[in-house]
Amino acid sequence: MMRIATLGPAGSNHEKATRAYLRFHGLPHAELSFFETYSEALELLRGGKIDFFTQVCAHPEVAITIEKFHREIFLVDSFIGPTRPMGVLTRSDVETPRSLGYMIATAGYFDQSRWSTITTEISNSAVAAGLLAGKYDSGFTTTDLADQYPGRFRIEEYIGEVDVCWLVYGRERVRKGEITAWRDAPVSRLFTRERAA
Image 1 (cartoon, rainbow, N blue to C red):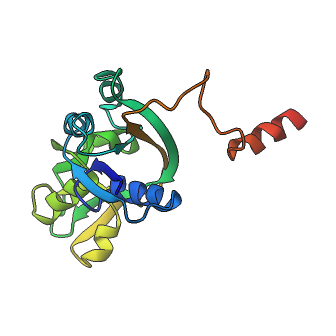
Image 2 (cartoon, rainbow, N blue to C red):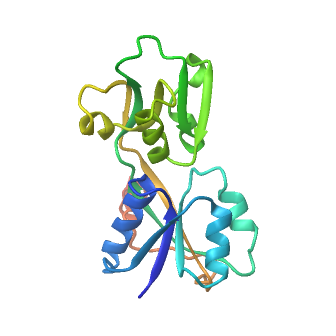
Image 3 (cartoon, rainbow, N blue to C red):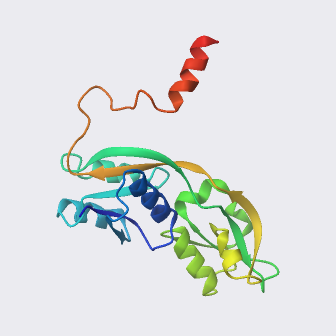
């Protein structure tokens, strides 16, 4: 059975995207596991404990993930997929929020200067757990948390779904020519329209 891993914990955008990727390739029964850091993912892949892992392109560790073992671990695929709807949630019992939790890869979506205390987390799921535990007043996470716990949170700023690129790593290089690309990719119709204009 194929073994693939992604950034945890369960319930993250990484899990959503990876499961969609597995369904797309007809691999719904592949073994999916989670890791806490990309250093851990690299070691799992190098050691043969997993066959592939995924990473969102916006993660601040993309460069080191690609570079650290560049002779052993390779980019083997990429795909575009939506995040879960995201935004800034604040605990309903807090009138003036002062503390904020967010995943560093989401920093560009909103202005963090409104909060005096900032905590960075490993994933949106970790931010949701922190909000539920009262670790901070506000958090940038998936907005479905407000639906799951009616009355506990208010949505301060709604971002919604965002299309992002996901990177897939493996132990065998797939690039054979100058580039590896899909000639019939959906973007080709945009290129055809531009050529016709």
